[in-house]
Every structure is written in C-alpha cells, then in structure tokens.
Length: 336
Ligand SMILES: NC(=O)c1ccc[n+]([C@@H]2O[C@H](COP(=O)([O-])OP(=O)(O)OC[C@H]3O[C@@H](n4cnc5c(N)ncnc54)[C@H](OP(=O)(O)O)[C@@H]3O)[C@@H](O)[C@H]2O)c1
Image (cartoon, rainbow, N blue to C red; front, side):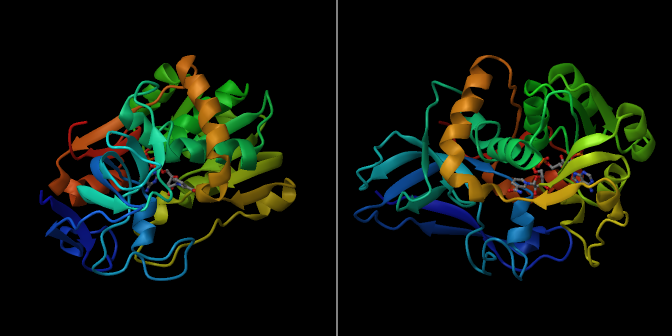
C-alpha cells in the first residue's frame, strides 16, 4: 500500500519571526521500510522555541536544519510497520520525528511510552522533553534546598510550569513570572506557586523586591532580556542563575545584548550556568520514573495546549513567541 506523506521543509532562513513563505509544504509517497527500520505515523508534533534556533545558520549545540530538509521537531506517533526487533506495530514512541505525517526511523533515539500511565500528549510535555528540562535544570544546575526562594520566568509555559512545581515539591518558596492575569492565576491557583508577577502589567524589579524580600536563591530563566536583568538585581548571596533559554531574544534582528548588571554575580558570589537537556539523555529514565511518581500522586500537574491541523504548522509555531500558549504547545496530526 502506498502511503502519502505530507511534510514541512525549510524553504528559507527566516529574518525575525518565521513567515509562511519560509516553509515549503510538500507531498511525497513514503518509501519502503528496510531491515532495521520502522514506520511511524505521527499523532502529535511538539512545538518548541528551540526550533527557531535550529533554523539559523551558525554554530549551535546541534547542526542547523538545511534548506530543503524536513523541519526538525520532536513528536509522538504510533508504529504502523516495523522491521526492527525492538519495536512492534502498535507501539507508541516519542523522538525527533520531524514536521511530517509519517517518519521512517532506525529506532535510535526513540522511546516507547505507555498510554496507561498518562495520556499520550503528556509524553511531549510534563513527562517528556520539557519536563526533563525542568527537572535537570532545576535540580542538577539549580541545586534547590528547602526554604530557598526560586523565581521562574516563562512560568506558565511547558518548562516553567514544571520547574515551579518541582521547586514546591523540594520545599522552596516559588515565584513565577508570566504574561497576563490568566496565566498568573493559573500558576498560583492551579499549580500552587506562592506568588506570580505579570510582567506585562507590573514593574518586575519592584515586584521581585516585594515577593523576594530576602533575595532570589535560584533564578530559572526561560526568557532572558530585561527580565533577566531585573532578576539579577535581586539575587541573594550564593544564588544560582540557571540559563534554560532566552525566548525574548530568539527573533531578534539586531545583536543580542547581555545582562547589563552581571556584576551582581560578583557582589553576591553567585553563578550563572547554561545547560542543554540532551546532555542528560543517559539519566532520562531516572527522571521519568521520579516524575511519573509525582504525577501519579497528584503532586505534578501537566497542561497541554493542543492545536489542530497539520497544515497550520507555520502559524501555530508562532503562538510560542506571542505568548498564546499555556502549558505545552503541540500540533495534533492524527487520531491515536
Ligand atoms: N536548555 C534546554 O535544554 C532547553 C530545553 C527546552 C526548552 N528550553 C527553553 O526553555 C524556554 C521555554 O520553552 P518552552 O518549550 O517551555 O516554551 P513555553 O514556555 O511553553 O512557551 C514560550 C512562552 O514564552 C513566553 N514568551 C514569549 N516571548 C516572550 C518575551 N518576549 N518575553 C517574555 N516571555 C516571552 C510566552 O509566555 P508569556 O505569555 O508568559 O509571555 C510563551 O508562552 C525557552 O527559552 C526554550 O528555548 C531550553
């Protein structure tokens, strides 16, 4: 049976926010599956801010997506044919499957997931890559201790909402920064953050002084820019600043400016450290078991923001940069 695949390829390197014309919507017949390979039907495609970085030319932690190549993306799908003994037809898997309806894989980098433990979309968010990012970024880089004050930006997003809940599990006072009243209410009322700052309506520096009178012990930064500067102005002695991401800078058309008050690190004997979640791949199993335990016990809530329509990928991707998602943004491609 011939399978028709649709995919989005990179057509041009975007300047600023990616436009629809930066992508090419293409159709092809899927080739035959060879020995050692499997065919996966995509059900959900993960939309991540990092994808914006992957389409820039230049040095990064992964090679840039080439012009004419299918766009790189995480995804979750069902195995529909397998010539790989490690996978059977009907298995659900996550991995880098690309922005397409079907993917052929040799199985490397794919993880099987169990829909009896959690609904499938959760494996792209809280129990998936963004959950792992929150786990290792906060626990390994941030090293929280009970009683400390943790501030998280992008707090109503996929990574931030999990990082804040893990901080609470570890006994920290947790303050989230997010855009808009609804997101602030969500993180306090539904997720149990101690306080929220609406950066679109409040003076972040003043609000941090008010909510963190003894200073910030850990600042988990998802956004960079002015909010990073504001957080640095309020760090405590020995603080750890965790550089997870800087989404406010990803579509810059002018050079990125670093923090202007970095000497706050010197004065406070503080550290600022970046990390990449992929470096923790050998420990994903350990994290997934602990996170699944918290999830089953009701201590860790997840939220998925699921858009429909494969052909809408270019517009749905932009929701990340417009703050139009709450929780983990993904695109539903097919029914399970
Ligand atoms: N280091 C790693 O290995 C790693 C892995 C995964 C993700 N990350 C990083 O983690 C961060 C969050 O990623 P995510 O997948 O969890 O996305 P997300 O937080 O679910 O979505 C992005 C959110 O960023 C906020 N935002 C967008 N533009 C902004 C701006 N100019 N200023 C302030 N906030 C802005 C928006 O929320 P508001 O409405 O609150 O503005 C938006 O909803 C990103 O920086 C990403 O690159 C890093």
